[in-house]
Image (cartoon, rainbow over all chains, first blue to last red; front, side, top):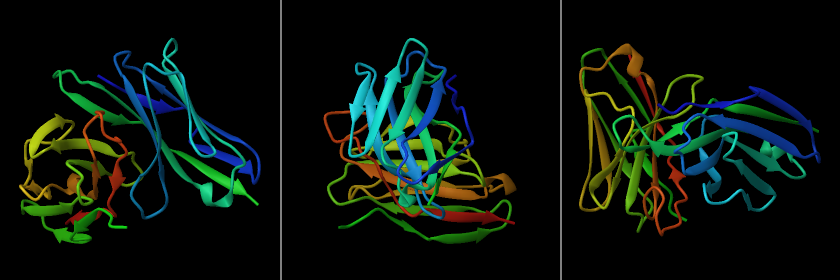
Length: 115
Length: 117
């Protein structure tokens, strides 16, 4: 089955610095990946996605890097702001043991931005 | 802009009771996803529907069922509730499925907090 995990449970950065959140996945057949941001008491918010035929995708202040060789992806946030403080989840889409496609979330990383 | 609407926002049930959670997707979105998030845990994908047909299935217990109606709203039916079913249940919607020619971007609702006592 798929397992997705994050390397660090909490990341503390200074305002204005760049943040990097890492994620590892186990299913080499995963072909679609999403990063979500979840603020306290709210539902997850889509940040950026990437398909397995890409190794990099950029959004507004965010970049996702995918390394299929080592089954690793990262989320880079440029010029981190206090409003970026939240829990970040990665999710991988791939076939389950039953042959159906399912999205598996990793354990969240809490990003704390220090003023 | 209209967002995903979930009702009720809070629900308290006793063990072995049933519960129905409702989700109203963003207008024109054709895909609905259900997730369960236990306290301090990451969201677990339960099930999704595309154009009123079940499209993907995750870790949804057999005690749960769901469907998407002709107006694209969806309902998650939960029977024989257990204490471990206490969680936040999120619904998300998107234009297109997992992934497709649509935007794929999933918009999450505020969630329904289910407490089973």
